[in-house]
Image (cartoon, rainbow, N blue to C red; front, side):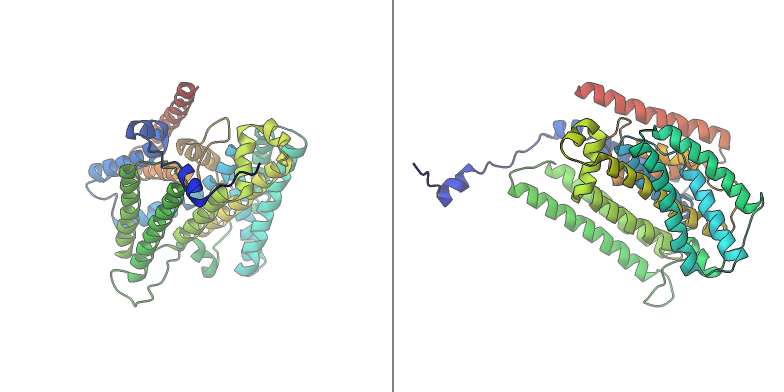
Length: 405
């Protein structure tokens, strides 16, 4: 007997959109909303304590320049931690790549267009070499990258012979200190910067609305309308306001555009691509991922290779900002990067975390560093406060996980 299903029958089977309660949604997404609210509160607090100095365009520009390399590495570290591993060598790779760039440009007069891709390939090879031992020889990532941290720190001193090397050519310094020109002509505000900020905010809101509408077509409403509207108004308003403030100074730094492009690419990769989803499956349960046909060794290898490449990019930007390569470059960067990822919502056990969360976590660390420096708080107390913030974030993660279980 053949069962005939009519169009009306099919339509009747579609369930209405399930509407989550505000309380349940807030409870299940407390970490996601919490870090965004914390960032806004910290910025507001420093704005008040510094009598308005914190949000001045010049200081905001410095904030982005000072933390660009941390944000870039936090994106790569997120994938490593989501896969269930850790990378302690990123700070040393930053210094080593900067030293290579200095030797190539200052000592051998090679052009920037040659040096930049070579340094990125070096970072890719370093990350891949470390990933090989972790993925295929099952050596704990903590041990492999700890060894890498020591090795590349020593190689940096060997390359530089214990001295600083610089300055760099102007076209290399543009990587970090350059600004997007105003195509509408000189003057204040910088209309190009303002236009880019408005377009970015519009695209974010458009994509959010499109994603929500697609979910509603399948009868799913993951987020109450009030949260959806409030979150997107806050994000879009923040983009436009920050771009306006920057437009009254020198416009958008080149490095800010670099960060925005990387954030967009890796957000798409983690949310939409098959490989990105498999990395989350790897971190969630490696044995189950292996049994389901996922090549877990290759994914682990790729996450470390990607981390090495992004650390190389950060090393180039850091060297360009300092205009010199020093033996101590990258010192303790890995601590700020790892802290940013955990503060941004990543789980210690792997399988959980978002690119946007890692970026917000890095911004929280950067805002704290900048704000405390403006207030004249010593580096000793800054380290204590950042350590307590990291501890609180991890305790909060463990507490939430225990409540769900």
